[in-house]
Image (cartoon, rainbow, N blue to C red; front, side):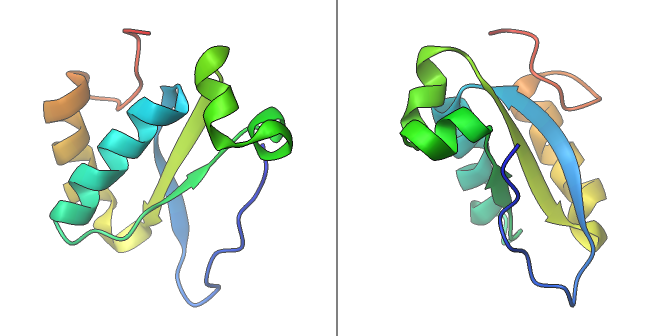
Length: 91
């Protein structure tokens, strides 16, 4: 997976791994609406061919948040994804 440069002043943690870029962006938007900063870590293929190419092959996308927001992010993700561990098994 391609590592996006994250601010080193905060510890970032993966709160879920989702299948497909579009779905990951929808979850990310929900976190932003709750004032939780987040970033997506896409596969190398998505970085090479464009972010939305991953949705064509159901490539995995990791959603990261600052560690201090991880509990709240998990709560929001559980409502959206429907699983307590935050992993998407629907795609």
